[in-house]
Image 1 (cartoon, protein in one colour):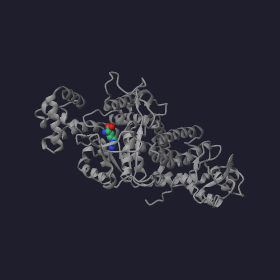
Image 2 (cartoon, protein in one colour):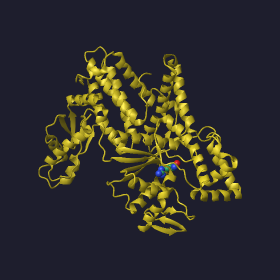
Image 3 (cartoon, helix red, strand yellow):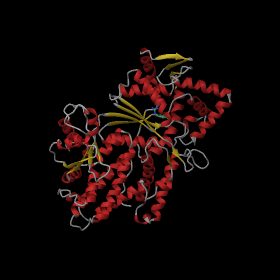
Image 4 (tube, helix red, strand yellow):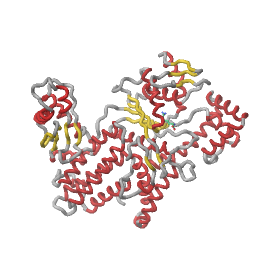
Length: 587
Ligand code: ARG
């Protein structure tokens, strides 16, 4: 369908206010409107906050305006005629409070019901993006940090995709490095018939890694062989390549179990992928005179850092940073990405800071505000109940698959307690347990500002009365059941434009619904999924208030109110989808 993309309500208001600002202070032709939702609904729906800023610019120069308040008055007066502003009022130092026309809100919701929530997608200044996320390391533990990266990265990718951005979901797995020499040699030793062994034969690859490392540290012969193995691998020896491939495949099987549960799709382009491109990229950097020698290594000196960025190690090898410089070059020049974002724990902030600064020196990352833009999306730690880094009781690492399975199994037990196993088929029970369990883990992560540490707590995240996915999924299912119980055909109801927000709690809910677009816009441009979580949680609360105050079924306003219920579930599902949560229609 070819429907007009409207832009958010805030954006439409800003366009209008821009005209008013031009009329109010023609001399300040660059002044951008500052429009935001009112914090206190008593004041209005939105506010325009330009008056004070303008006053400070024209103070002493203007004879027309004596104070910010008089500017606010003028801004309000100069708002052009429109279909959506009902009235304005001026508060304190010139804040212009704006009340929207209710019929306009009603119509906007109605149009969304007819044309789909996709018409509310914000427009972003980017068409292609790389989201580098998850990115665990072969033969090492995939830990909760990788889980956070997977959850946050997937949600950001989903938001970008919703905004029609072509997203390359990149799994930058650590599949290269000197540790592979030791792993391959150990494989040869432990499994002489390694070519024929199944994926399961090695069992726990982490234990295998530890054993190989022990041997490497203790046994000089082995160590020498391992070092030689690195040379053979990097030289492209077929047997070594095959052994490397085998080890990677075993790790991948474990990673995929996590991705399958979370329904996250990723395209792997691991560190090894960029190897063939490294020499050329290094050469280009050399030609720009950026590379110098320091203590036997080849480095790039970066302002603000005591240590330089090592590009070629003393032994001639490349490292993590060399690969990132090269991957950036590839993403920019071959893949033509305009936004390149990296989702890792904040511990890597300095690494990315240095890499980005080096890329700026090379002229590959332009000035702020120009494309391509590179951004490190950092996040904090996951903590255990003891306030320390999350671990199981034995202080062993937590297997992510076990963690996810526990969330699911706890959800299942709860459903069985409520007799759902008798009501539903086994598949339904399974699907609901997964949606609740995995949804709970994701939401518990996403609802926090990503930079803060958060405590992993099953009971909290599965609490049906808290700010949890479980509560939200129940609310959604409850509304679905109201719609079903009405015995009305919603598609039929949609044919009449009879949505009317008469009761104050209907209007409040309606206004919140039409704010969806700007919340998504804020979430994705600031890379903060928690903003969308807050929105969704408030939406559930406002719905409950509406339902408490307004009779739906068999009321005089039934048709309108059912449409409002339908609009609510449509927007809730859009939020779920952006957060990677599977909706449930009955619970
Ligand atoms: N493999 C790294 C780790 O586990 C994360 C890689 C992030 N992406 C990148 N382009 N450096 O810490």
